[in-house]
Image (cartoon, rainbow, N blue to C red; front, top):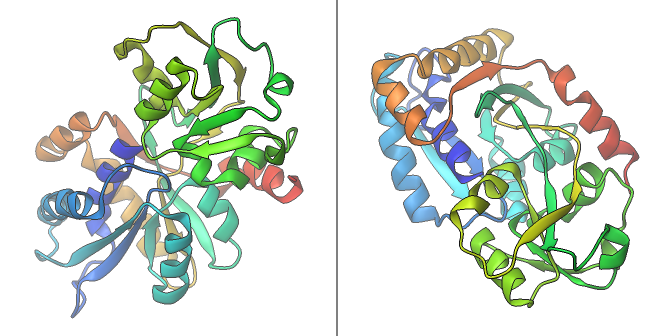
Length: 277
């Protein structure tokens, strides 16, 4: 979710009470996203300056490193060991044990801190996922096939049975679906909500809707951060959208609030990941 990743990044200046001799690197992972690193880092830089002022931290205390590649994110976490990062839920589930990751905050969007995924097809063309076996299935979320298989599809379908066509732009995948170049597209909640603004020549329908899946926001390395740092960090983020300037940023990106979260919220997802195919 592009908006969530950018706005959360702007709030990460709340890491410590004192600026490090060198800026603290904040890793931002947006697998499959269409945002380029130059634009993303420019937006993040301006937002970080606002948060430094709000949180009364020295200017330029923090910097960001952005990637839209899951493999690059894994490499950066392994090489640089950032204290805090924005990751997808799939990356958190995959890396949590190896890198001691714990969730810190979740975004709240339209009153929800969870979302559903949907498999969209041309209306009346297919009735279920079994009929898509061997067919072309696209979507930005396919950058993380293990997440789709284990979490979205709850381990009930083997993605090897589909002809996967990952895309960096949801709208491009949907246009291909409209033209019949794709048989189906997998959408997250934000992408699905944007369908109403698109003019499609053929009506679409969902033949699969996932269970509610918690939104992932910010994670911390529990061995390089203290409980006090994580608590203070979470509290700072919770207050961000109530600040007059911070609220403008939150409104701009459609985020109502950030809430601290207990790791237990993600335990059902951990179980699915562990038991999944």
